[in-house]
Amino acid sequence: MPRGALPEALPAGRRAHLRVPANSANLGPGFDSLGLAFDWFDDCTLEVLESGVEVEVTGEGQRFVPRDRSHLVLRCLDRGLAALGARAPGVRLIAHNTIPHTRGLGSSAAATVAGLLAAWALARPGIEPDRQWLLTQSNAVEGHPDNVAAAIFGGFVITWVDDENEPGAVHAAGAPVHPDVRVVAYVHPEPVATRAARKALPARVPHDEAARNSGRAALLTHAMTSAPELLHAATREWLHQDYRADLMPEAMGLVRDLRRRGFGAVISGAGPTVLVLTDAERAAELDGSEAGDFHVHRLGIGGPAELLA
Ligand SMILES: Nc1ncnc2c1ncn2[C@@H]1O[C@H](COP(=O)(O)OP(=O)(O)O)[C@@H](O)[C@H]1O
Ligand SMILES: N[C@@H](CCOP(=O)(O)O)C(=O)O
Image 1 (cartoon, rainbow, N blue to C red):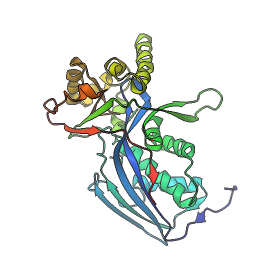
Image 2 (tube, rainbow, N blue to C red):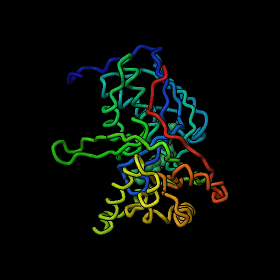
Image 3 (cartoon, helix red, strand yellow):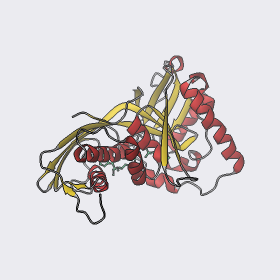
């Protein structure tokens, strides 16, 4: 938009209906860089109104999320519209949420991507969403690209942030998941806020641990795409889980038990959900008796955030 130009007020009645997948960040050694999308979606419809704000929420978070423009989806809608030189004088949001909040399954990334994708659809109707634009905008909101990239592109993603020629520019590359990879999520009943979990991390880590971690992150890309039998070794990490263990003792207990049994168990995102990445044969051994208070979900790999209408 030219400097000084007023944002274009969008016409009342313009609508966007979309869905965005749940996702898991880190996957063990890929702290702040690897992400995986699941076939588990939040669904939203946004409509431009002449004035006012109407928010209707069912499902996860319905008792807690704000009903005004501070709602995360609407904040991201407004941010996206401003970046595209538009504004919605009024707005209606109808959200049906199935992704649990503050469990490490990327609910905030999904909400962020939903608001930005809706902004694109409302300001650029009929034009294919620019997913690199979505990635740049949503990374600026979330502060790390792993979850948002999985939500935007679907599948397994490897992200990085340039620090050389274009410092701060965020990128993502997708890699095909081997068809034998199986995912089991153990969702803990209690929340852990990502913001609190990030505060538990140290500013520096020992060089030998960073070196070991980078080897496993490289192995994980190979295991996910070509060699699921290596997922146990490939999910070992040194950068975040132990530092956060006091915030999620039961989840770390389950990770350790499952790892002793040879499963690729990790904390999903900032926790406290536990994720097992394994192959089809070993997944059959997980009969739920290991789950305790956790809710077990067998998940397929999910596609990208998409406009439904
Ligand atoms: N669908 C949603 N609608 C509105 N706010 C949401 C939604 N999903 C997440 N949030 C906000 O994000 C917070 C959870 O974010 P975070 O701590 O990063 O956990 P998560 O691992 O679930 O992303 C919620 O407490 C809520 O404030
Ligand atoms: N890399 C981030 C991922 C946070 O994911 P979330 O789903 O828990 O928000 C971190 O580990 O802090």
